Amino acid sequence: MTRTRVGVIGAGSWGTAIAGLLAENGHDVVLWSFEEDVARAVRETGTNDRYLEGVRLPSSLQVTTDIAEAVSGADVVVSVSPSQFVAKVMASASPHLRDDILIVSASKGIETGTLRTMDQVLGDALSGSGTPDLAVLSGPSFAAEVARQAPTAVVVASRSPAAAQKAQNLFQSRYFRVYTNADVLGVGLGGALKNVIAIGAGVGAGLGFGHNAIAAVVTRGLAEITRLGLAMGAERSTFMGLAGLGDLVLTCTGPLSRNRTVGYRLGQGESLQRILQGMAGVPEGVETVRAVMELARRHDVEMPISEEVHAMLSEGRSPRTALENLMSREPKPEDWS
Image (cartoon, rainbow, N blue to C red; front, side, top):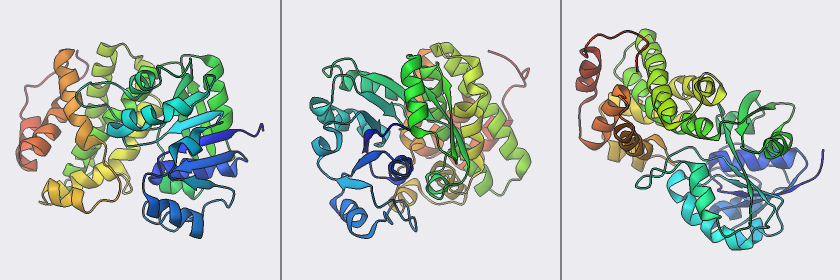
């Protein structure tokens, strides 16, 4: 394997897990942290217990709070900041990037206000940095499980086959299997939209409903994700794969899912403010749902589960009322557009 210099931008749970994986793969990795105490902990103890408790990181992993130090001279930069901060963070990194660099987006979300997907955000933020290649990494991958080297399969998408293969080779390991895809839009949308549906699935679990209800949320959630994706120009097959169905099932059912946890606690009667105050990481679906509703209106796509999640988060609609609204909708064929 060719040794590559990699800057990983974002030291949350997923960024830290990715940095550890790449260091284990034998690459020269510098992890950028916004928080000085997190950087100090990684440097002095080899752990990031704030976001990835109990995981020992490779001794070769370097960490810094200086973004120029993290990306200068790097062959590859992995963007893993929370989606609403990607534009600002990567714009500050842009002046220090090589012209021929590969940028890999590993954040899952849609920028509110602009409605840009992460590849679009990065394309705009890096417009003054030559012509960097861009890839999007997504799929069912809890950070804690990747950090503990549990078998995981993901997908990396790029419009450049060479860039996709480069990213595939970079991440591929004995426990982290990487597939390639050309549908950048679909892979990005799948990773973002599943977080919204996961909140809905969590609400059902919090209300005490059984597996029937959760299965219904997953399958009908996939249907509305696919409808919006197709209306925006993505490929149907992408939503049947790792970035679509795979990530959706994981996030809707796995106890490590922050978005499912938000929904579960809403279903248990807690307020959104209280839930968010006690969470270390960012549940991306809370912000993404606002952008999803705007995109649904723009493309004239009906997304009932997402609509009810938005009403619970933004309008104070009760979880039981949201469920009643979904169950009392006019009966329809299973496949409709």
